Image (cartoon, rainbow, N blue to C red):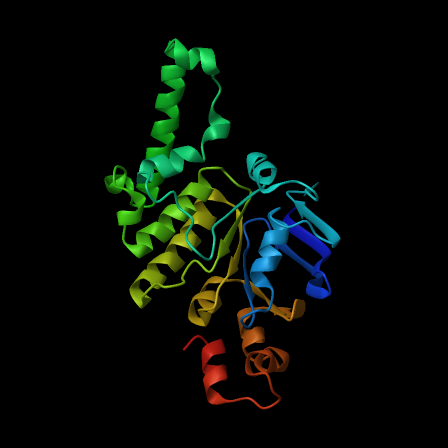
Length: 267
């Protein structure tokens, strides 16, 4: 079964066709990349898939179910998919642990009266939720920072916390929007290994947008390339590196040069 399948997906803002007739899929347990020049429509496509925008055309299926028309909340609440954002969107004045607990609302099985009367069921449920959150933080080596305010974390740890928060919803597919943005080389390598670990441990599909070619070429099994809202290529990393249409899209002209080839080779 495919974790994600989209067919002929598109959206139009007035006279602008931001995304046109895009079809792609992510298999279960597969790591797939989505690349393209600035303004190619990558984040717009993510917004269509995850319910932030409603498509003008096409369909979206996650875990074999049609999610067209569902909101972002409904998609996440049904355990279909969760995402991170290009610009970090943590609750910056909450603690690390509180950021994870916020996404645990669907695990709550008590009502208002249980809270008001401080019942045993309420206390047990809260304890279980906190234990699960701490276990997840431990897996990502953030448990020692559980009580720190999120905005005080180093940049790389804030990126990791976004992934932890998404994973706490137990998604079938994870969407990462430029997770390596702003990271140094050491942090990027750590992130690459972390994403691989997440795929192996949780057996989920992952779709990644990224501009860092070394990161994406070293991580993904297949890569889609978007340009001006349309898919222009799909294949294994070694195929994408030498694809003339891809090189042309990054250059904006017919001829190639050493800098672009080097970038696509992740050097």
